Image (cartoon, rainbow, N blue to C red):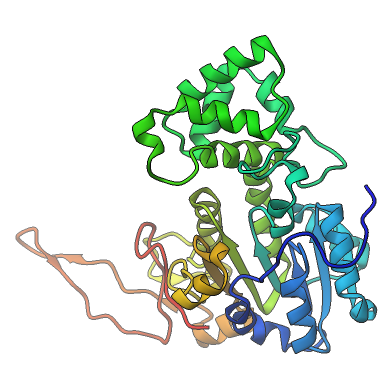
Length: 374
């Protein structure tokens, strides 16, 4: 697909730009820092990183060839210190191996559909504009939304709408789709949006915005395999972080945020047996949480950029193993509070707890969100 350079179609305002730069800063200030923009898009966040940190090398990934072309044009003055790659973000290990880069010091995920994709009617993402039923972020490969809508079994369509769109009227919507596709193939976003609207009870259509929103989100996630890719992409990004490196993830719906939260909090906890009185070497946390749970946008941010309204930001720092070792002290282990000791009568006597400069192990289920400072 040819792309004419110039002003890109659609507006682009980077979400939470200053907050992202502040969180990433300590990692990007490390010698020889490499930053990965996992969702390059129009290049707004990447441009700000390259301007603020003149020694940083950028790796920009995007599955959308049109977005890559616009970003390359926008960032051409930084050509000597960037690598823009047509790849999905879970392909990071391959990209780093091809570039002979062993680790990274910064990473940013800005998940979901981009401004470019939303604002282009011909891409099929927007339910308010008529277009071919496509929804592929990478238009060079993969199944289209038209193929999903017309080819999937009814039960599978119901599962997709419920699981990825939280659509409680999924059976009614799918029944409408099945009746329609038996008469003629569904090929346009306008026709699909109309079918969804007509299938939803009138009372339910009066609130919650466009009634097709949840169904279109679900189909987009299915077409692009977004959740499966994210499941492997976040661990790969964390594995690539060097000590002191930082990762920021911005998600826009709960399914994405749950995947991110699970991956980040798992590595911020000890993996050693909970009943041992000491922290064994190699079992301590490898990440420090930089945000208290997920950070929402400020009112000022939403006023400036309405598309930031649903964003949830999480950030972490890779812990330096030498720092962990120094926290353990000369015995190379960190003592934990001892278990309560039984005494006569069946009561438990709580032991005196001595602290050794660490917060100890976070037990499963305790303060899931975590705390930290940037």
